[in-house]
Image (cartoon, rainbow, N blue to C red; front, top):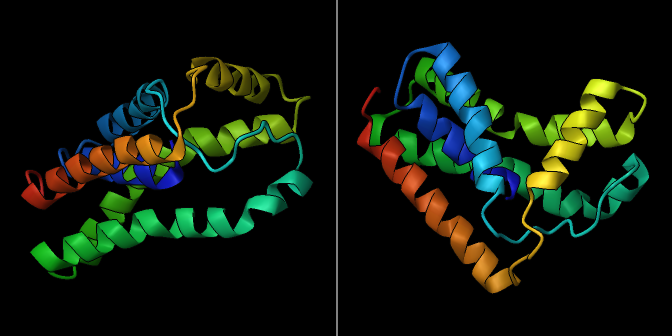
Length: 157
């Protein structure tokens, strides 16, 4: 899944509870569960260096910004500007994308055994069949729409 999907779903988890341990745990576990669903990604190869990552900087920049922008816009539209609650939602989003950041560090620093194991685990759970971009984006749009709906309901907020 792309980072936007993970950020928005992590934020949705944060909108459901004020328990930080639950937010962290569920957001990280949900990340791996979502990655098990066949999907599309703009990075189609395993990256073993930051040099290779430079080829994807425009896509990464948009992806990194889109999740927080969607969550902010939706939250402000329904609930007004509230920095404390926005910070809480962003915390959930952060833990939703954290496994991807740690996985990348495992690729860049293979001598770190913990990060490298996480890297291999993350690669292992990914579906072997990658969807075409049209269907792959559709699956992620549906997931994002459901997560934004959960945030809009403001169950905890």
